[in-house]
Length: 167
Image 1 (tube, rainbow, N blue to C red):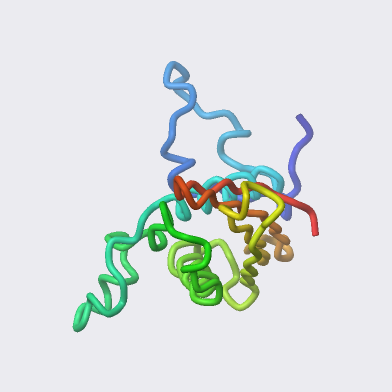
Image 2 (image 1 turned 60 degrees about the vertical axis):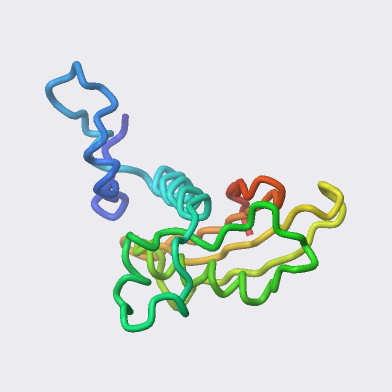
């Protein structure tokens, strides 16, 4: 494998560094210590999918006087959508909650660049799904990397499917 230049060297997240994919090997290979821009996008996409598929435990009004809890890992995720009727979902509020969750729990995204747009996909799943576009810049050297995600949520199960697209 060709040597990566200093500008191309990106460090994996702490979770990725602690995950041992080859426990029988006593030493890590160079590929495990640094990652490429494409691999960074895959890791961020995976972690955003995990965030969106976690149910937030409390809403803001339930945490009077406990402001730090709302932004802590105790409240990781977004509100539960499983079984929600499409007509009963406030798309603007959900869009905002997803954006806030990304700002609170995904530090690799540059906050002021995070955009979430929601659309109801009537052509798929008989109107029982929502589609989101998430666009943001990720921190990287020497310049930020664009991240463009399409996210579909099945309202019957509450499952989010996140995939990259190239905007």
